[in-house]
Structure formats: C-alpha cells, structure tokens
Length: 196
Image 1 (cartoon, helix red, strand yellow):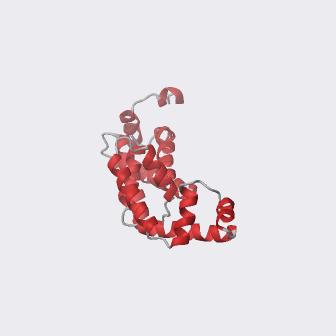
Image 2 (image 1 turned 90 degrees about the vertical axis):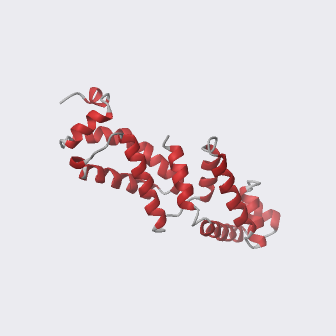
Image 3 (image 1 turned 60 degrees about the horizontal axis):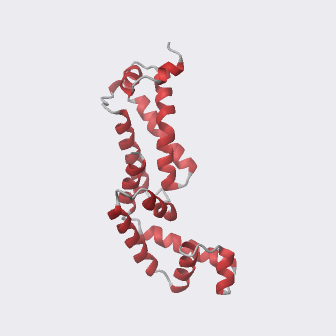
C-alpha cells in the first residue's frame, strides 16, 4: 500500500483501475477529491445541507456499487453528469425547493458565457413578479431590489413585520411555482457552469 500523499497524486484512470479491484483507499481518495465540488454545486441550488449531502452520498454509493462494471474514461465528466441527473430527478419529483434568490445570484455569477440564460431567467422572474398581487409585488420589490429588511419595509408601508414576512412567503412560493417548468433547465445549466 502506498502512502496517502503519493496515492493522491495518481491520475483518476489509475485510481479507477484500483477501484474496479475493490480498493477502498482509491475510493476514499476519489471521494475526498470530488465530493466537495459536487456538494457545493448542489448546495448553491438547494440551500439545503441535508439534501445536498444525500445527493453526493448516493452518487458515491452508486459509484462503489457499480465499480466492477464501470466503463468510465473521464471520472470528472462522469461525476458531473451523474450529479446533474440526480439534481434533475430530485427537481422533477418535486422534493426540492430551490432558492429563487440563489438562482438569480448564480445566474449573474456564472453567466459571463451564458448571457442568454441570464436574460431568460430575468424575463421569467420579471413576468412572474409582475403577476403578483400589488401589495405582495411591492413588498417583494422592496426586499429584493431595494434590499430593505422586513422591518424597514414594515415601517415604510405602515404594516406589521409579520405581514411583510407572510407576503414574502407568498411571493416566493408563487415565484417557485411559476418557475417549475423552467427549473430543471436552469438547474442543469447552472450546475454545469459551476462544475466547469
């Protein structure tokens, strides 16, 4: 057995060959190398630590279970596609609640090469914001575009903080529902950008 530091320097192809031979150390090295990046990508979409940990864990459990039959030429690419597929399945089964503000922030951050994606997301969000009831839209706009706190919004509009919180909950729920058809596409594109 090689010392761990030297083992970590091995190319993925060599580690995969050892993995196919049931080498747990090779599996651990691959897990340590790739799981943080996959977790980070999923976390940026869900903002749910447990969901993201589960998705990454399931992916690596599956990798171990299929180790003897793997025909992988690029492990990094394989893992990117696998996490993308797991995210899609999770979204399609509607077990996921994506963070709308996280999607907006990620679209801005990762859209240098994806201006079209950012424009599409912005258009869909703006259309859905425009369909909110007037008071709800006003509160959402003050929160997300003028960056006011719930307390500041309550003072400005002469309403309770609880009313602001309730209206924000309604707005976010409505926006998530309005993006449901779009979410798998958005999620996959953002995930692929983050995993580059």
